[in-house]
Length: 325
Image 1 (cartoon, rainbow, N blue to C red):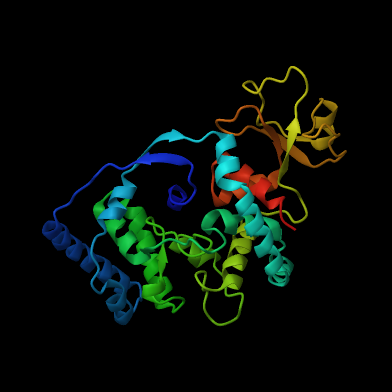
Image 2: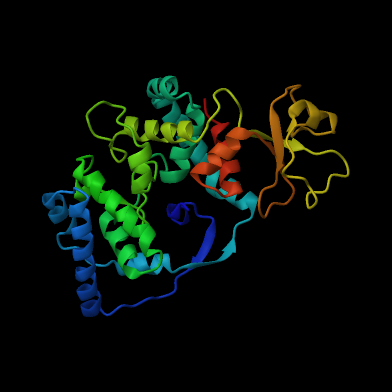
């Protein structure tokens, strides 16, 4: 489960459920909790100096608790999500500019990781607006609050200990280690355990700095996709026009067929042209809360969804990536 996905996507209209914890009682229990984390971290090899810096003046963040308790009460349609949130003219223009400005860097990243630079830039754009909105919460404070407060405590405690290891490794200073309310960090919005597995030092300065190094941030996204099974040179998918009599409600979304076979069944490109006479396999993909748009999705769409599972996210990232390069 990628907890960070409730933070920046903008899909859900959310209503806060106030949770007020008396300050004195909260701080007393929180301090005791931190002592337990401190002991566990020290046993794991994290230095006392790192823990002193990370925990200095730390208090539970009431806003983090409030955001964690929110419940979704409504959703945007696919068309609203696609056109207003994800693939809007401003994001397209900013993405094209950032793609062109970073062309040499992206080519170097592609050479190393064999992942499409277009999808790397699309992820960068939808996650943090090309690095301009990485979140304003202290990651240690947010994770400590969530691990202490009790809901999904084990998960967040694991992420907190990983965040402490990141600090102990010297990759970022405690004051600069900011992110979402759920602890997702930097321009790629990695949780700390994903940072440990996927972040890379692409600029060669000895730190994996996904906050302030564009090279490290974009290469880390590419590394995530490489490790998730990205197939070089293959498309993610395409919008299609189904044959007459096609029922969206009864569509088989499991069976894989080649594009050649989908064409024989009467599927065409969205503009009415023929599908490629290719043996590349695809499945029918239906957006959630859509009004009729249909896609054929390839293996790389499933890889995009390993970054963030919702089908509408994957489709929107794919469509946005098509607008670059």
